[in-house]
Image (cartoon, rainbow, N blue to C red):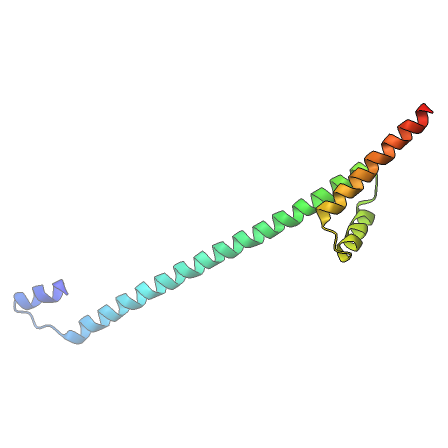
Length: 116
């Protein structure tokens, strides 16, 4: 509006509709930029969520492979057993701990047999 006031001050004819159009265009541009900023923020948030999901899946896969390898078992068979345990209400971490405990007990029993 300062430009309009200046023009009136110097005696120029001022067409109000031109200024209204300019104001509307500026408001539309501003709203468009807000919309774009919001959309970019949403995309960034979605990207972060997808990344976390992929990281979590990779972590579970890595844990499965490590545990299966420690047991000398096939990773696919181990996953099947862990799935069955999950159906029975056993958490994956509890299942892994139980399997590791079983392995440790088996190894100790084997050593005890050797000493007999």
